[in-house]
Image 1: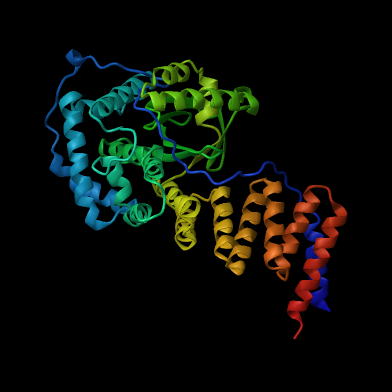
Image 2: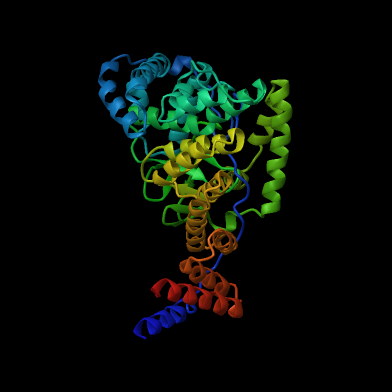
Length: 439
């Protein structure tokens, strides 16, 4: 009898909980977008070679140990690290010859936002002019090696090569893997070598997703350094963004209605498609350069998920998983990579969602039911009750005997004002709990 009273009290507690939610996560999408070879965005900078003071006192040998430690921490294999180290030594040599390493390191320590944007613009221009941001997949480039040599990279590329995909589709899939997330990883490693502090990996976590660097200049001013768009912008936390834990949301006065954002996105996508096939990105760049700050923030940098550490391994694992899931139909590998993405700290709702779907496609109903349950809990706690409701119902569909799923679904019902349904699901949870207690 005391157990019955305890269970009834749980029902009453659940029926007293209120949270809010919105929106559906949408279909699977790879984080990366293929970006053109263009230096556009907030700060476009032309280099004046006559004004550059070269400084060749930088000792490349001193970076090897530091770089190896950084790469190991980011998930790279020991056998691939020497090749990456040589690649970054070459990058630093190029930078030293055109900007002067020590001079650049000093400029990167400035607290002046406009000066910093100019410095990052100069750096990106040098890298672009020396072929570090090419379109498509070239295994000889340093950015490609950052994908090839990370844990699971060689296996995925071999799986793509051995698949039944058409050759052009193989090329497209590989180009996704070396687009913006790989460029962001390249930028993260490079800036650490240049002594930049307070760098954090960041993502736009609405679809389509986007990866870049979040650099705290002081308590309120931040730089959004984007090696994919080859752009650097500044923003103020408290003015442009409001912080909620690891997430940053645009302040109300900077938010553009979703239909306007989608219209801008459609125009850019149309220009990009034409530019890609014509191999002329001038029209696309002109349209992107014409965006004001509010439009740019809404398109590429809202809302933001800012991580404290870990680099971009979570997004890379997510991309690996999505290729296995959507393109290759290799569900075991997809589940493994989605799990790695979650373990990295990139606990995006879409990752939980695609993990659950991959488990169900594999035919493992028990694992899928558990994954849908976790999706329901995470999305409800994030205030996305529509996703949560759908997830709990899918979990019940696959495993109708788990009492905890009914308890959770009753919370969603109550939050939506469905009192009768909340009581019904609460009672179902109660009955399944009683059955579990019976001998």
